[in-house]
Length: 184
Picture 1: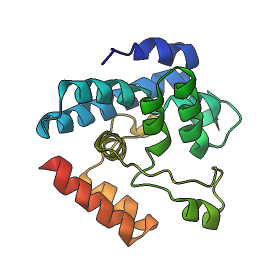
Picture 2: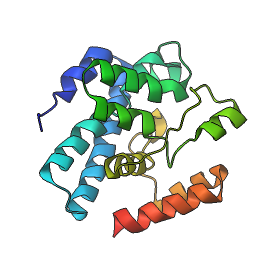
Picture 3: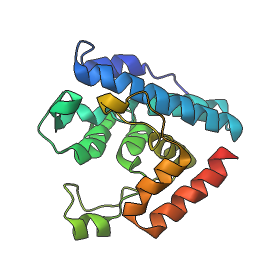
Picture 4: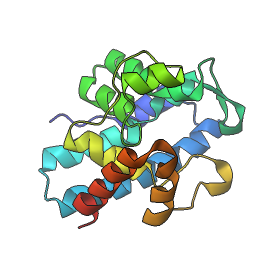
């Protein structure tokens, strides 16, 4: 597997002298570090670990297209659309597998039925982690935020589980399944 120069890609879309960059880098480093610990625990291949590293660092690249002044994001899209914006960016960068991670890192998943029912600002398609790599990064992402006041705070498993309750029992069950698989 060819090594991806993810810092060049990040800096192409999120300038290093911006608030967005100062929030983005710690977040993706924390997510990636947790994801890599899981890959080692699961004894995934070196190629899978290398992929998780680069995909973890790029999973939120779509924030450069959203409007969220609190996070220093000056784009036009609603925050939730950072998933599809990230997918589009990573496809354009020639990274289709990474693009799937960007699109599908939605907690335990957002189905087209949920998008339709809740009128979410997304295309009506399923955004559900399917591969082990997608699941690991989605899981790791649940523990960290880009919100400035909580940037360096790691949520506990119980805090994440409590936060998932608002999405229903199936979401909590999926999270609990991931805890069993990924925390050993």
